[in-house]
Length: 393
Image (cartoon, rainbow, N blue to C red; front, side):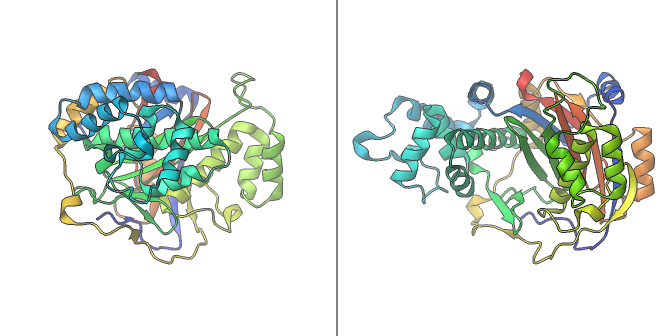
């Protein structure tokens, strides 16, 4: 099963690159097709009912004829035709085999929160018990809805990528909560990471390297145009002035260049820590992730890098056809752009400085702005990354 391919070094060499607004568009205009599974993929989407159901309709149309998906699609049709609670009991076809803990009370709460039968079916048959429990813990129903929609989206994207029914994808979690795929026979190097900011979400995945991701929506940019020298918001200024989160050099850059720089530096640290597979650490102000190559020493207690999972039997382990998956994927995600070609001169030079091909404790972080989002992606070594905006399907 999948283990984190990071080693418990105390110091990491980090290469940080900012893609400017101009260079980002230059890269998009010169994008070229690449081989299936030879690159990372970054999906952007909004976790709304309309957007999810629209994507699900496209997903269903593309996979419904495939034998592997027939059981899932048949149960979905039955769910739409049936009363979810006939005679105060729960029909068996609604249940995923991995959700035995879901009792009538929890199912009633899910139904009241999600309302729509399609969403109820997808939540029960796509999400694992950890995700369902987390989603039911929110005090505000709208927060639960947003959580469920976002995580269903992630399962459907992974299903489309791997050509595996979403209810067959099993997650495992490390001791810090980072998810991995537990039961795919090929997943020795498959890694993914998720981030959200309000209703906006992103999923980064790679077949080759460990990844981390963080996004933040810059609220000032939504109302004040493209001025990159906006003054710091009150909350951002308080965080910078506290001296707890940013190095002295980072503080100077943020104060001199404004609000966008705050989100760039914040997302860089979050993405790096998620690449590591840990949460926030105590010495964030000692970790300088400004542009360039530097040594970073996060202070955290490494208890166990192993992945926590439920017991798996041979029948749980699944494999898939890369070629067929690539054909379906190209139909589901027709419009995509190459974001960071690994041959880009600046990135190539910095990656050589890092010696990333021979150094296991190195991390490459690139940051850019797109659709009012500041996005930071971290990976073990630079890899071409294809951007796919699902809001435009």
